[in-house]
Length: 153
Length: 153
DNA sequence: ACTTAATAGTAAAGCATCAAACTAATTTTT
DNA sequence: AAAAATTAGTTTGATGCTTTACTATTAAGT
Image (cartoon, rainbow over all chains, first blue to last red):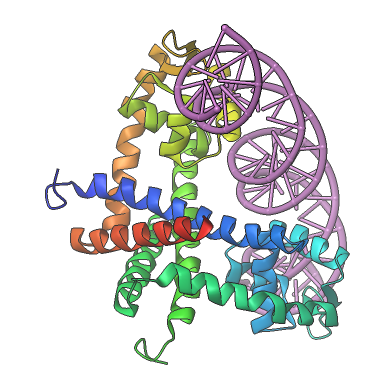
């Protein structure tokens, strides 16, 4: 069956399957790296750390939005990162509902070790993928999220 | 910052974020539908059912491959679907390591109710997305999985 | 000002995932 | 034919996600 003759429905089924596969492969790639180097960190915790390496001192809700996670999951993950002494919470003086998350020195130091692996992973992923193709994908995915968001109202 | 000036690394970060968002939105869309109609089925169980609606009587490993799930997760999900009397296991006479999964009548009947929702969801998702764009995305995602798979060797 | 609504975070329970260790059956090597 | 390797499935324990309900704080509506 050629590509042109496939229905959009069939293509979408395959599309979602491929999304899941890439997601899983990315996760497993980094976790293998972590195991190999005895890093006690899950993929999900890394997502939070990577977010904080870009911007320190934001509140949990903001971290949730950026990492696309539930705020309840965030409580759990921040608890774990706190136990590992990689981050700490500080109540926001301006709005006492917020808890601002800051990196400890240990948490900051970790970036030097881990960021190269992320860069390396992205290089692997992007082999034979052009910036144009990435742009198309980002736009399509953005449209889809927006379509689903609108439909949920 | 324009699209052309963004680094591939930055684009990949956004790309993975968008993947996660679409994945989550698809899941929540269907779960909302299920709640609304009092369907006692999780998204993950549906993935297994949808696989079987296409092809009945395959073994657990094949279902795992198609749904991109761990075989341990599959044991768990098939147990749950069995408890709901939607599927049953049958030992493969040809190779007694295999357990073939079959739909019950109740499991088959369910397709009439649920498949329209999936079709509807895909229509929503694909609004303003062309088959060409879908094709590009599938190809890019396939490349990425393959790149990561090769790197894992 | 006072009531109501919205927002940030936590807690608990149920579900799904994953890794590792295990059993059983089959295939490959020797 | 016997030993070793592979494959399918299960079990267990740890981790993460999600829903619901809850508390505390702030903002909005009257």
